[in-house]
Image 1 (cartoon, rainbow over the protein chains, first blue to last red):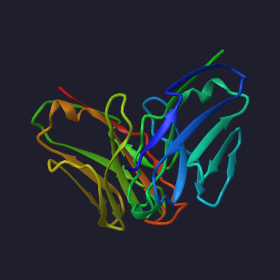
Image 2: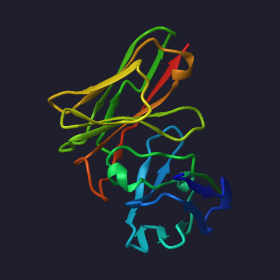
Image 3: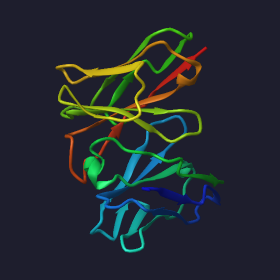
Image 4: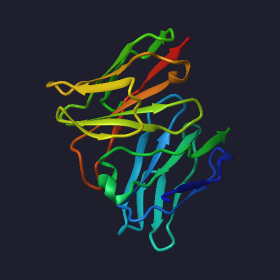
Length: 116
Length: 115
């Protein structure tokens, strides 16, 4: 069964600290892996999109890594800010879904809280 | 600001009623997607339109329907509303309907409350 599991479910860190969120998936074959940030009550915002051939991709203070062999991805946030408080969702569309062209399936993700 | 607009922002109605949610995609985007997010849940894909034609269907109830108009805006119609339909409804748009880097841009959502 195609599944995506994220850990931890929730995380609280102090402002300025770094953190790493994990995503394990069993989706196969997969086309790409996406990380989204969703503020409470707002639409998700794409952070990174990686194909299976990419190992790492950065977007400002966000760096995503992908190990297609172990089916693991991580999202590293550097020098956290209060505005980083949000849910971070890993999305892995199956290849047969057009790589996400046919609509994406979102889990609940990791709920990150940055404390001053 | 993603460039995707949704109206209304909030909607409060009663069970059994019918409502219409509207979405305008980013300029130049041909695909529109509709998602539902219930309280403390992940987004659930409902339906996708590409250049006026239905392209993909997700977990959309028969009481729900959508369409995309020639100017590419889309409407999601929800009828015979039930309490469980209370949720955030998001619209997203993308340039086209395929490809690994087919990025979806999400609107601010419409919060529907059914009393």
